[in-house]
Length: 83
Image (tube, rainbow, N blue to C red; front, side):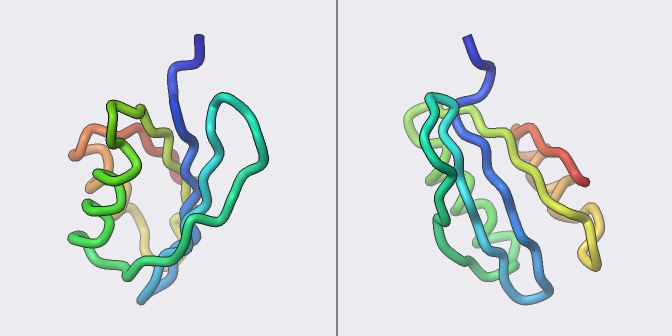
C-alpha cells in the first residue's frame, strides 16, 4: 500500500505558487491552480488537499524562497522534500 494519497508539486515564486497534483491511485498529474505565496494561503491549500484524511507528499525547488515553506509544511504535519 502506498504511504501517500496525493503528490503535490509546488512551483514557488516570490508572489505566487503554482500547484500540481498527482494521485497515488494513478492517472495523469494535473494543474490544480495558483495561490498567493503567503502562510495563510499555503495552510488553506494544505487543509483542502488533506481533507478526508489524505496523506500528502509535497515537493518544491528551494530557489529564492529557501526553506520557509518546508518549515511551515512540516510543522503542519506534511511530508515535504526540497530539491
